[in-house]
Amino acid sequence: GVPVAVVDGNVLRVGSRLWCLDQDSRQAALPREVRRRLDAAVIQSGDPSAFNQALMELGAMVCRPRDPSCGECPCQADCLALAAGRVAELPVRSARPAVPHYRVAVGLLEHEGRVLIARRDEEQMLGGLWEFPGGKQEPGETLAETVVREFQEELGLAVQVGARLCTIRHAYSHFRITLSAYRCVPAGAVEALRCGRPVAWVPWDRLGEYPFPKANHKIFAALGLVPPPAAGAVAPPAAGASAPGVPAADVLKGQA
Ligand code: SF4
Image: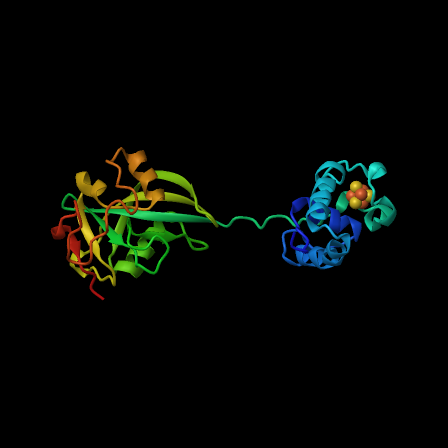
């Protein structure tokens, strides 16, 4: 009963054609403009509910996205898109922006039977979860060089990159990654490790006790490792402390 126009997808299509509006239907400007033009008509109709319902049905049944029945449309005499021969091109719908794709390389650095992992900063996406050190490939870099650079930059460690263990793909809501995991060994003293976030040297058979991001679960599966707990199922330990199933002895506070 409220005298305002209801602008759903069907009404948006009718409005864009009726007034030959060129705004992008993915943007807020088009529904705003259609609503502005319809509001007066809704009030004049005297029955907002019936008016809105009729307009939605017109969009669904007559002014269809493809092959609209303009010959049966009660608005055909006033339809600017019909007069201009532009019905098929309205409403304008821009292409979805391409989803960015990144190539990522991580290193499984082994030393004395243990693998190095690091905990993501709380402020980061997936904050608090553990991960294998690594990062995005930069232009002109091989993936092995990415691993070497990331270990040096993030941990102050020199590593020698060995065989590629697996490559997985993963899609997040706003980007996709292709992630390659490499076996690494130290190329210098591991005591040189310097990191501003907690790190841990973990036996292979206990990696599954640490919560990792979903993309890393695919690495675990590819390598036949015991899968980690679901994110949130186990609280990640604070530096030097132990969470359930995560021995404090593995956790090293990062040295800035
Ligand atoms: S005349 Fe055609 S394009 Fe215009 S509102 Fe009616 S059905 Fe839609």
